[in-house]
Length: 96
Image 1 (cartoon, rainbow, N blue to C red):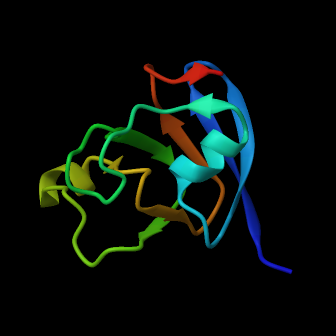
Image 2: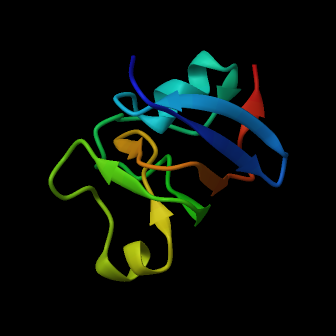
């Protein structure tokens, strides 16, 4: 059985589960939450949002983030994998 983590979306207060092997974007879609996205491979930055709490790893070696953005907590949910419970600031998120 694979590990799952709770993902919270702020400021909306929504939450859903994400498996350790699925991107946060895919987990959100499966839960009926639409995060902005386009390329889905970590280059276009459409899905850029800020992680307020938690840890993620990436499916790609160097996602399209600067060192400063990483330091300030920004992530790309299309290629980010939860490594703990995560809280994201995603004001553009919508429910389907």
